[in-house]
Length: 245
Image 1 (tube, rainbow, N blue to C red):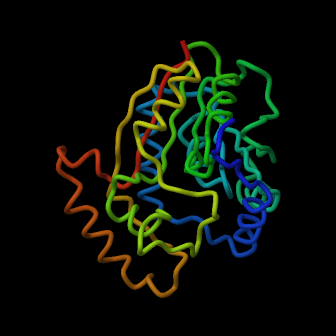
Image 2 (image 1 turned 90 degrees about the vertical axis):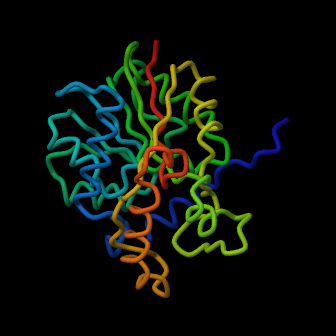
Image 3 (image 1 turned 90 degrees about the horizontal axis):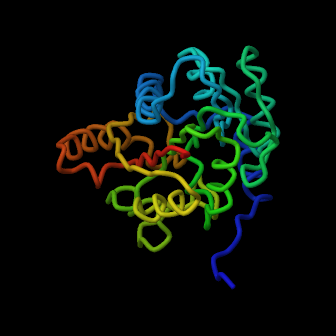
């Protein structure tokens, strides 16, 4: 029997419902959000007008970007209040309240899946990967972005084993991922998997008010250190992507 704990879904819902009240979880600048989503759809090879599920959509910022880029995008989140907020902010987009380990969609009903900073919320993402595989059509593709545990800043600030770990602004389910481990999970689910990395994602929000003044310095350092190609494996976010045969 596996010793890996299950995700505490109640705590996830409570945490994100609370953030819906002040709409404060849109952490990247609009330019960085667009760059991230454009990179994701390119890696996944998504064609315009493809039907795409944005899992862990939050208030729908990335779902709306997919819609504006010409995709038939739907958003899914476990937080009912964030889903309600998404419907209010982006009435042209369809949103569903749902658990990504048991999605409310028929098998083979999507061309693409975006996992919006979601995988690192699961102590064991095996069931999540299996559901992504199930809802994709043959030849469909997925892309996931998550904080990279190999990045020194992500490790020091967000990994529970770090002496500088901060729990402010995260749930206890979260942990930055090891790229090879996440690739392995999706490969075992049946996907052909590849990995890429991205940095220079400009933050405009940080949960800890004590550290917000450091954001400009962090953004500058992140861009300077990790822009060289040989620094790719240590960039702040892992992009895991692949195709269903």
